[in-house]
Image (cartoon, rainbow, N blue to C red):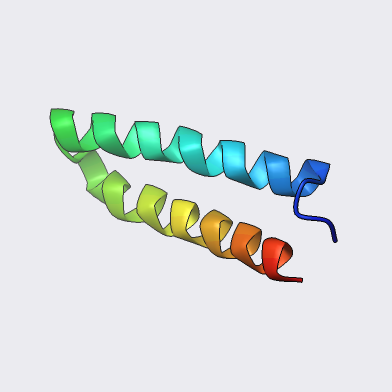
Length: 55
């Protein structure tokens, strides 16, 4: 799969959005351990994107 394809672009933009949410949650506090959940999702998307770039 090409590194610049639509799925790769989507995963990168979603990881960026989750990063913004992480910053905001950390700034405002962490209701219900949301930071952990959002961080796991962001990490998974970054791993997915890295694998697509590598292959």
